[in-house]
Image (cartoon, rainbow, N blue to C red; front, side, top):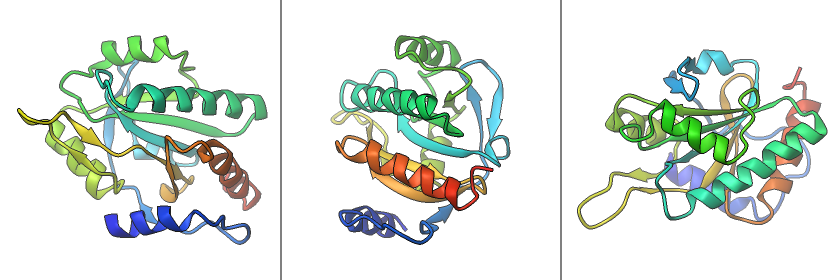
Length: 191
């Protein structure tokens, strides 16, 4: 399935201008802890369009830039009054407890009503869910390598289906992602 996601991302060089967005996969059941301490599950996001990314707060690689891009997306969503929830999932749950996520979210100006920061209880379970459920690459840190993950943003419809995959560090991502959000809304998904 990860190959299918990579092929989809590569094919996005040519914009799909009409018709419904493809259904890539169904997001599996999950239950995470939000920075506020409350539990958030897939069912809590049912009925919402959401954009997910995967990061960790101690990352010295792409995560700070991805978070800045998510903050820019948050501002556009608010400016246009789009019914979109942003969801950042930590892939380092052993360090990224709710208090750590709260400080990180505050540092980046994350609106708690618009942008969720989630963490799990067990790194192996989180990584398995990210790989098999969200189809995103992630590898545990070793003595020779840091924690590794991809930099994709995912667009998920109100039924919990992945409808778009976007390279988070690509300059055109925000424009394309917002255009696809508007398409989902036009197709009745934002109602």
